[in-house]
Image (cartoon, rainbow, N blue to C red; front, side, top):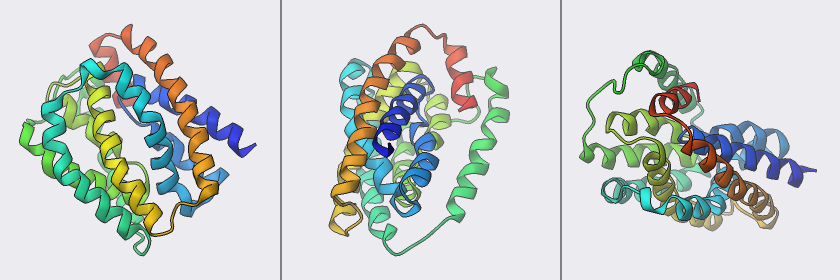
Amino acid sequence: MEYVWLFIFGFGAFTVSTVAGGGGALILVPVVNFLVSKESVAPLVHLGNFIGRPTRIIIFWKSIRWDIVKSYLPLAVIGGFLGAWAFSSIKMEWLQIIIGLFLLTTPWQYRFGKKRSSFPMKLRYFCPLGFFVCFTSSLIGATGAILNPFYLNYGVVKEELVATKAANSFFVAIVQIGTYWKFGKLDGNLFLYGLCIGIGAAFGNFLGKAILKRMSLKHFRQVIIAM
């Protein structure tokens, strides 16, 4: 039954995350914690995302903002490696509190979707942002929603936002998963769990794209804020 539930939640999480510009990992964290174990949350969530990402990249390929990818990836890869390495010995639950507080301010920053931006954002800021987000996500499993206000403030919305985040996450996940495996945090059973999440995620991407296509920009911002 664990495999069935992980498939179902993988499908649901990625449908929602496609429509809401991310947040699928946030949905999966409590699910993995309940069905598998707390210790497996970060590596398993990243593994499931990694398996499901290629489908999203393919169907949104033309919308990827490669200028952002080039700025984001260099330090993001380093942050992903260091975070996955630290995962085996460092527990930083307080990071979840800080991240949660930041996310809770988002509705007020955007006046519940009425404002298009809340602070100035430049391309070069994505480089250090990539390091912080990928380091912390390797430790606690889900921080992708933090990126949404930065993308919105840079004028990246809908298909461009979903596609660019997917490309960045996929390349960083290669390093993260390799590091988890190297330090013994991924075994055969977890790979099967991750496969169930990833297959569900692949189907969820197609449904999410169909819904996203019909959404207005204002509605999209409101859904991101709600997530």
